[in-house]
Image (cartoon, rainbow, N blue to C red):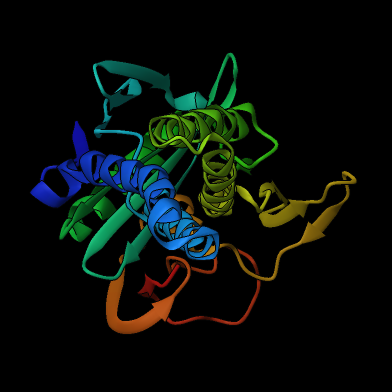
Amino acid sequence: MLEFAARTAGARSSFLAVSLVRVVAYCLPALVWEQQGPLCATAFALFLGLVDGLFRWRVARTARSIVAETDALAISSGLETARVAWSNVLAIEVWHRLNRVDYCAVHYRTTAGNEVATCWEQGRREELLLFVRKCAALAKAARPRRTIVRVNLGDRAAYLALLRRLPLDVALAVLVGVLCGIVGPALWLGAATGLLSASLAATPYLHCTALVRRDGVWWRRRKNGKLERLRSLPRSLRLWLDPTRPKRFHPKTKSRLFAGSHLALRTRAEPDVTHYDSR
């Protein structure tokens, strides 16, 4: 049994940090409107919406720990623990970001549709590699890996999370506006902040990835159903697809995705290094 979990103070307090930024982003603009006027308040609201969106994108996590057991993948979030059979694990993406942040996203299937669980930790690079290798081996033993699916905005889990939070954020801004006597401006400020924040939070789900393996070659399924042959796999997925090959790290190279192997794509050889993610 292997576990990847948030243990350091920075990772464990991420929920508190995101919540604090959220309260500031939707409460302060109304106060600035009273003191500095509409232009300054609108600019300040857009700035805070940008900060709130970046925190939701880069700092927030949905899982406290992810445990690879023999028969299932246990995902703990809050007081609940979901057990996902290995045959329902669609993919695990891995990134190594700046400031020694190791980040993973588990895409899995449920009766309600596809969902994703995210977790990150600092300075656990080797631990994350071992964890993903173990998960890949268990998932491959449960079901041959012929398809890869990432959660995107077309999935219920992705767009519902955004739609549920937006009205609550606007309501928080309106509540402050009621206390200050500026309900109309507070509604506008909350909507502007919330829309910008939601746009950034939706960034990881913008690209729809559906890959199919045929005759040892990976293909991308386009929206019209046609298959397009891939020249290279997304680097964040290569560790999931080739868990047996050793990885080396290049700390000075920046890249959006994790590095990996060629995986029978019949392309030219690439250096086997793991890059930092600059997303």
